[in-house]
Length: 226
Image 1: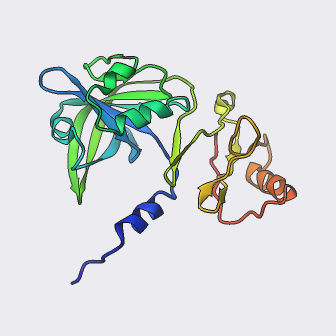
Image 2 (image 1 turned 45 degrees about the vertical axis):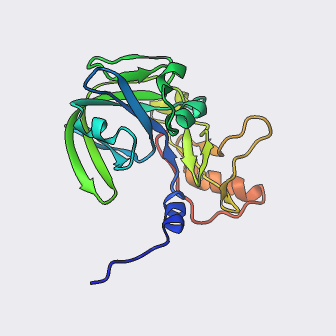
């Protein structure tokens, strides 16, 4: 059977339509030196046991070190850390010199001022085409309450999430697209439109607000329990 053949650039752009968080995955090499690189293919897997995974390209600079490590860490970058993402996505010799970091309980590099971090023991490495899926079992973590840095269609964005709503209040956020790019609202501080409606339907309320602003609402999703 002939395998499907796609234009890699077009496929990459289609994958990029899905907004993701931006992380830096870190570990230590056999000599104890810190290694790390930017990765946005990250997701939680399980609460019991506590598992997460990140996809790593086989062409990544520290691929061999990372897949052989007994422990690794995921640093979820905050909205003010775009420069950190760029540094760790490039083949610089000493990327850690420009970052404030410390060792985690198992020796993995943990960055300061991240939205959250997880230190993991290696649970599994799964072959997946030109990438591998590294599954980690969480051994330590911390969430700072800072907003995470987002990435979609080749560009960064900073979701405007109110951490005070984390007590169970239901809300909705709209991700708007215009001419293939994310379309935030505002003049100085750009953000995604959001609304909370205790006791009501925030998704419908947000949709009606956008329509009153002259924006056509279709093919959208909501993020609940913000």
